Length: 344
View 1 (cartoon, rainbow, N blue to C red):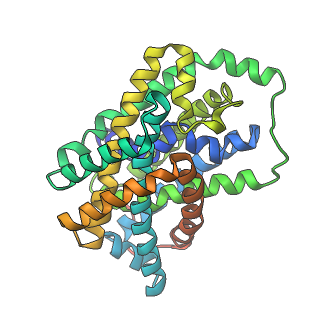
View 2 (view 1 turned 60 degrees about the vertical axis):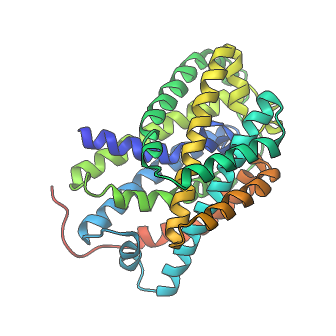
């Protein structure tokens, strides 16, 4: 059970990064569609659970130990595999830039510090950190993720009365989106699994039975659905102004007390920084060009990219990678392993 909980936290932490915790992702992919967005959250959570289980199954039945081997098992087409590898690298690079922009957005929104100044600060910190041993810093996520989960759940419970009143007033829909909400939920799942699948491969040693895989996928599905709905309902409180904010949840939790906003802000900033370092480290090691020159180039370009803005980067790049990620999902679901059976 310890392994199951540990792995579940790692997976959930991968899914609920700065974009999720800030409310920006949920606003873009779900709140836009009103009540249909809630159905979208459920579908996305279920689909994520299915993919988690499917990937663990492929890994175990084919004795897979690295990402390249995984791609070879789900597709015999080398061109497709190279395309997927490029998509993963680009997503890691984009994630690094988006995390830097998220860091800048917080200090701009809360303290009106110019984006260039905060971008220069975090770029410098990233350079210094990436130039040294970062294993200890990345492990901080194992502490931050449970804190974020507990905080979101607590605020979500505090928000129940508002949510009940909101829906009792027949505020049930925003637009006639037809099936756009469904496509949006699939895209949300898709871009998250781009980075999730390589992580699942590294967690293989903890999940070596069919029973464990089912439990992890179920826990993750339920947790992501509950957390997603909590954020969704909190965003309803600020539906008249969330489109104008980079980090809407930070502003919304102020309604429960300024101290909540400060605590949540510190947690998000810590999560952004560690996620930023993790993405930057993974990108450079994937390129096999981990040296100070490339670290400096990565950090310098982040200062320029951050000027675009956190919300704009999320709005543009995450849906784009959602479309690209469908390729990997297609091959994962299509793959029917015929080799070794799962242990029971």
